[in-house]
Length: 131
Length: 79
Image 1 (spheres, each protein chain N blue to C red):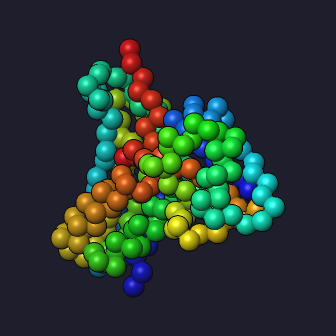
Image 2 (cartoon, rainbow over the protein chains, first blue to last red):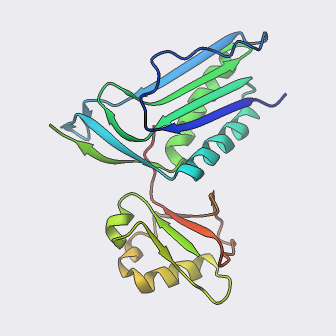
């Protein structure tokens, strides 16, 4: 069965809590990751990062990567939200939620996806905003 | 052919997008050659910038047609 995929870019804060997919009884693991903006970026203290994306391609590329990686790490559902625009320190720039039958596949898919995202998905930290 | 620039390439070229109007389809080398006529400083970028055609990364064999959307993708830093 093909993995269900939801990919989104947003200039709004990512919700603090997102529910796991409730419709699939086969889900045994819901693995979540949030990448936060750190106060120290490249050795200097910042208050925010400004993210830029090539929207259409970024969404397609995230979806393509998930499909490709799910062939090796079969999972049931993947949800990715990447924030664009100004993201303050302490807030999430990215959220990934993976539903799988067992935790091992979810951990593996999540780790592999984040590695590939940082190589291939056209999103950039455009500038750091300092005090 | 619509050309899009992202990240610091917008400073290099001074714009976010540009129009090429090739008379015939172009190879990857052809696209770069045409771009460098208008933006000579892009020669410094070629070694680390990937091209995308219609929202997908290209190979060396890709042919670019006049109606394509082409993006110059410098090293990414999302997440």
